[in-house]
Image (cartoon, rainbow, N blue to C red):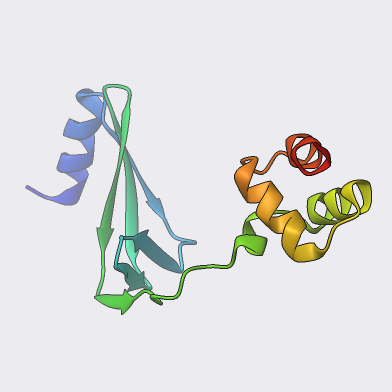
Length: 114
């Protein structure tokens, strides 16, 4: 069966396949490592209301850095400064309060002032 016949049969079954030619890299994030496919051939397939991607290419594994990201990275600079200014505390105390408050500046300020 040639590719023209295959495309015609897929169209009759309601399957639509589109090549994504502008994809430069595909990264799948795992717990301990990431899986990277450089210069992949990616096809987007739509069938019965579901979208599936077919990825073809040479893959490589990249180990993740074991160091935990800092707590400050989780909060915006504006939120940190707001808590520091309103509660009159150091940056470290503001970040700790935001961590305990789930990233909510108002709750962090109330907790620090009570």
